[in-house]
Amino acid sequence: MDVLSIIVAAIPVTLGVTAASFAIGALLGLVLVAGRRSRWTVVRGISRSIVEVLRGIPPIVLLFIIFFGIGSGSLRMEPFQAAVIGLGLVSAAHLSEVYRGSLLAVPKGQFEAADALGLSRTTTSARVIAPQAFRVAMPGMVTWAISLLKDSALVSTIGVAEIMSVTNQYARSSGDGLMPFILAAAVYIAIGTPLAIWSRWLEKRFARIRKAA
Amino acid sequence: MKSAIFSDWAEWLPRLLDGLWVSVQVTGLSLIIGLVVGLLLALAAFARTRLLTWPAVLLVEIGRGMPALVMLQLVYFGLPSVGLTLETYAAVVLALSLTTAAYTSEIIRAGLRAVPDGELEAADALGMSRSDVMRFVVIPQGLRIALPTLLGFAILIFQISSLAFSLGLPELLSQAYSIGANTFRYLDVLTLAGLLYLAVTIPAGWLVARFERRLSRHLTT
Figure 1 (tube, rainbow over the protein chains, first blue to last red):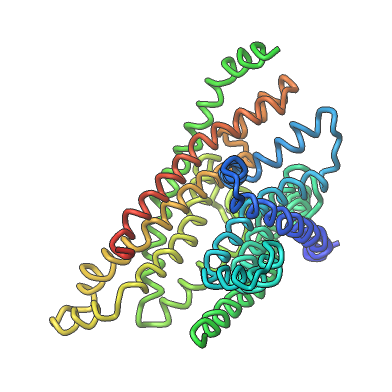
Figure 2 (figure 1 turned 180 degrees about the vertical axis):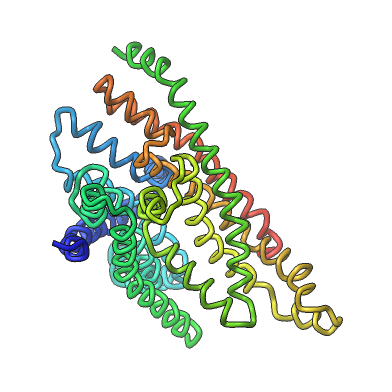
């Protein structure tokens, strides 16, 4: 098989790792941002610390801690599971920051109006604030998805057979160290560029809505 | 049990600190080289001729579009086939410099673009030449605007330097991994390495945030 078809065959694995990590991050990020806006100082402090640690540690170190550290002990893990847990946690921290920024963009009057109408805290969050904040958060979320796509190359180091991993193997066995990596780079760029264009489009559309309002 | 862990940590620490020093060196060198190239690329993207703007934009998009890990492998395993064989250390610095250049040129370009039009018009009205306008008006102000983001990126490239592990550079993660392989105490030693990374990135993050608030104080009041 030629190298391009080997790389193309690994695209679903890269996309799978990216999508699964993103989904975990999008959900856990909600928990973290709720924690950071909690009424209790302790909860706020803990949530903030978790975010700082997850953002401060290089993702590959976190992956190694999970796969070689925890995974070599009592809790056996497949590389794919460890990859998705590790990148999912990193995503949760970054996405919680995106959410937090978007919540700050919702005008205070919206909270006050919901309160004046006697809406409960949950209804206010779910029906009034979240839909508005989500629009603001969209471009940032897509930007994170692009970073995550590139970060997913890291999971080749713990043995997930995604793009980077099969490229490395091919380069080693064929002795050609140039072409396989150029093709891999091209594939990453080909997947990432449409996402980048989408993110820019969302940002422009949001700026237009805000100007009209 | 607890004291046993700490005595091991004390035994491993010197090696890990050696590794940390390599990480810091590689980060520093890549930042210096990458920032200079990044500034040149940003200026090229502002040039009047498309002969300069197009290649600059293309290079930046390629550099930012590929994972840093691919860049490292490409430089280390790929360049020898075009006749340029580099030692691990040099290959890591070159690859991280290229990644730095691509990202920072975008940050600098945004900073240069954020310089108000009035400044350019005023400089023009004063009869300054185009290169003088760039040198004395746009670049100093643009870099100042870009500075907090650039510092934030510096923290990121320090984290990215851990990928040099894949080429066998004896930086912090490599040291931790090889201690783990010898002792089978992966969790302990990798956690310690993680704490060392955090000991650099978290305070650095606070400093950057503080610095950013200071620089933008005049905007809010």
